[in-house]
Amino acid sequence: MQIADLQALYTQVLWAAFVVSLAFGFIAQRTHFCTMGAVSDVVNMGSWTRMRMWGMAVGVASIGFYGMAWLGWIDADKTIYTSSRIIWLSAIVGGLLFGFGMVLASGCGSKTLVRIGAGSLKSLVVFFVMGFFAFATLRGVFAVLRVNTVDQVAFEIPAGGALPDWIAAGFGMEAGLAGLLAALVVGGALVIWALAERDFRSFNNLFAGLGLGIVIAAMWWVSGHLGYVAEHPETLESVYLATNTGRMESLTFTAPMAYTLDWLILFSDTSKLLTVGVVTVMGVVVGACAQALLGRSFRWEGFRSTQDTALHLLGAACMGVGGVTALGCTVGQGLSGLSTLSLTSVIAVAGIAAGAVLGFRFQMWLLERE
Image (cartoon, rainbow, N blue to C red; front, side, top):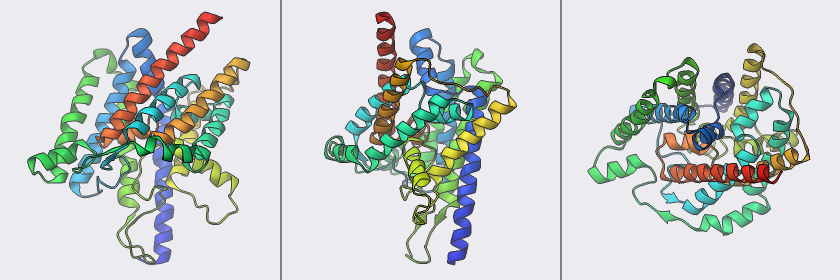
């Protein structure tokens, strides 16, 4: 492959990532997909409908991910989620912070982008604050604190950090087949669980569960197959084009928000290239805006009060710090991470759910004081 061919492929990867993320934004806005809302429905109303939507998306994405790995299209071990080093304390602390923050900020990172597309100015503020704190946790003052504290607490699993790795090691099974079987069992169970409730089987719910699961899998294909170069013409090493981590990536939004701000602020610096993460942030906003305009639901929205502003700023800061610390948000760990059947992702999602419950209780406490 020549340099010109590499540059052309780089552009193809970015456009493909943009189209996939546009579909995510369109579907999320059309179906009101929201992880915080799903947790809220369970805690406050005992309704599991929106949680089934989320579970179906995880199941479909997992089957898609390991199906592609079994076919040899992608390498399931080349993600940040399947590392054999389990940073469990970072996952818990980061998850708690993110879950608490998303309640105060009226939604997670993906919901923030979707709401920006639908006209929410307060979500635009959340985006800037969340991106700032995410960058500070990636490379700034909070990064030093993170690396020297919670990231130090971990344990190693020699076989690997995901369920298929343990199955392959325990039964002497080929890795691709172990992954496919695990995904069919776990992912299939989630899909069946979602479909088991009659009220769930409406167009919107199925569109969200199936559509977003396919979107997550498609993003794995874009970065892990389309963007994979076995031998870079200059370094002679394998590379995943346009990724910030150097590994294949699917949708996640906390760190990409930081990278988006970095790209916008330092645009004239030629070393600041567009990446998959940056274009997916843009794609979600554009997709949500398109659906909001088509559905005539586009509305300008601002803060209601000083307290509302303060809570959203605090929530955005918690999400920025927590999302980076936990290696992902409700989409990064909750959909993309869980699609790899990663132990770290399970811990992070449990932390996010617990943090959300704490956030709801804090909101109730504030209401009782008024």
